[in-house]
Length: 337
Length: 280
Image (tube, rainbow over all chains, first blue to last red; front, side):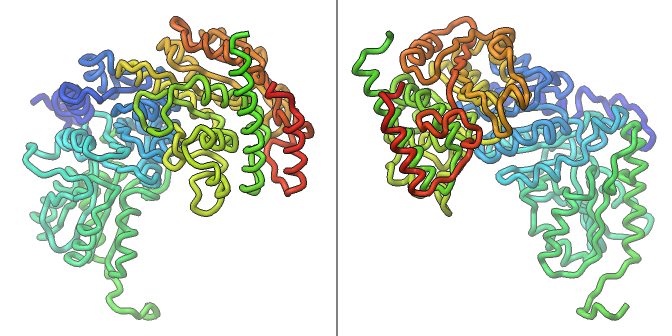
């Protein structure tokens, strides 16, 4: 496997392993057996890899030019005609430029439009902050009827793309730029939307993460076990909405320390979704949200940004060690400090 | 003269009935976008009672023609027209805007039987029509999609994104109608944000523009017949209308964009509609 070394990451052969490539190829495969699938892009067919579908089914692919509002509105229309549109563009243009069309035309009418948004988070770091997207989880999970998925890697992307066909309403799947290393070794696991996957067993603390943070969290958990003797559970919360409440509550009960990690603003994303479940449970625990701390992300290559924001294994290890020294209120006395 | 006198009288009578129903909705609902509902009365009647291939008893029939009211605020016109066409009882209009009603100021396609799209945020209808046009072509279906927009709505950039796409994809199965009543909330369209040369803009985007008097049933019938058989370029029907048409004290007056009416005002409006000759 060809390897390219980044600052703290190792990036493998992008043509065979990246999430967007796998997405494009999976969709082209699905198109063979489901003639209701149509593909849409807004001048980013190649960039989002939906071009594989376009090449296979030119009559079922529509390029709208650089016009996201029209693309998402048309996706609603195509769904109304009885088709299953897969619309792809960069995450930032999907969630904000086409945001109202997604909210009103697609979600309000509960139409089966599948949005596969690439270049999410800070994966396109060197493009500059205009092209970063640390807001999409917050926006999308606030739309009623929407299912929101952030797969950990290409294998999971493929599973998510297949699974979203069985979800009746709209689905938003966020993936990166396509240089992310694989997390899963093979496809031998159950991907069920709304059900977290335990990637590493543990009883001292639980990391709840999604997207690129899953691989890094697993690596961090392994290192923490070896070096600190800490038993860290890692939950891949690939579905941010509907959130797997059961897995969150079990983690609270079992470990009493919860760290969420997301390539997203800590406002409104995975951390807030998990935090709400915890708060509503009434159970006390040490809880920290790790991600982009409500700032516009810096410019730089993705791997440098991941290191800067502590979204790599080293950063996650530091957070876990800090959290192990924290105590939570075990009793109901709020005046004792 | 493209329609027979008896047919024209039938449509004119229906137009008058729809106007009276719109006034009723204004009173039931506590307020309605009366001006822009009255301006599209003949267009709605022409479509629902002459042009559209629909089955009110089978509202989700997949081969039906679609109508997207992109100027969703004219729900006070669309919804009584659907009732008159038999989708649900006129009696139900009394719930308009009330708690739990399917009917509101803007139409909800999941609640209003016969309504093909939820609209209200302007500039959304034409992109959806693009999708329906592409969908019909992909599925090799012959249904048409008609999209009615307001003229002020054409300030929205998404309208022109969709216009480009209609011409680019040669979607002659989509018929675009603009209700050119020349008024928007804050004043005249040319004062707030000039649209002219409006027809020229559409032509330059690749449309065949049919300019008609939007209250003239003959002209509308001709235009829709022509649009229905378009095969090389998409058609825009530029319907010159009068906002508040049919109620003399509302006609052309921006203050009747949205209004409430007590029983005496509603009675005045009904009397004015009653004085109309036919629907023309």
